[in-house]
Length: 336
Ligand code: PEP
Ligand code: MN
Image (cartoon, rainbow, N blue to C red; front, side, top):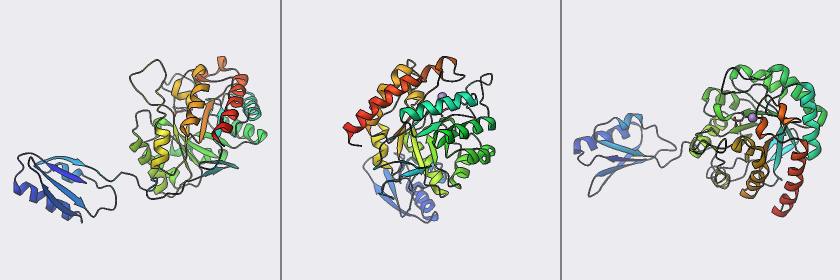
């Protein structure tokens, strides 16, 4: 950490900052410059909380060199983590895993039909939301525990592990009973209490990037899970908010190779929520694999025009089959 003093900071102010740093058990090394003095902070083993420093008279800014994450970083843990869920492996050395299914679970019949068609097309994991984080309270909120039962039944029938979102701690018992992978959605990426509780479990987790989260915040959120002992974490890029409104979100594909450099955790891409538009899903799925995504999450509905949620971005059975046929060719080309 580097503490930069104001132009006219006095010797007394500089000494007071040094003292404050030393009281934190760290070393302070003043670096006098022609314009201003900076104070290098040494001896810390990770991120330093700067709240007590920023308020001291004469301090202009604090520049952090250490990251707020460590356990998720490649520096700390060079070997890639492979997440295993119900016989499916996600991560380095494995072909990209495809998770597919409807946005929300609507009925037993819809789920069983969806499971059969995504399985037949070659998906490995079945998705479906029982607890839905909807923007407005007057829209379909999900079937809750009843939906979890349909998801499990459909997954078992098709022989697929299932992933579903958990929105709060109180839902964890039910979601763990029925699901193989716990999804923490974009809106809950920084629900730190939820992250801590899920970190205490041994269930694999799919952590989606918050819609306005930086990569550092994304990795720091994953750090909460690992800090509690759960390293079975798959990261998911699902598009971020930008000024662009022509697509639902902006798919930030460069995070895929960057996260593979920075972290040992696998990263997958959700082109459905990223684009919001069915016609863009196949091409962005291919782009994601080329960028190095270790999996995809794709919304598929037997009848997208009747979907209670996210129909416009959902592929139908034949559309998904065509996509999977294309992806097989691409995976071969990419050497999987
Ligand atoms: C979802 O996958 O159903 C979902 C709500 O995604 P996100 O959290 O990325 O918006
Ligand atoms: Mn959705």
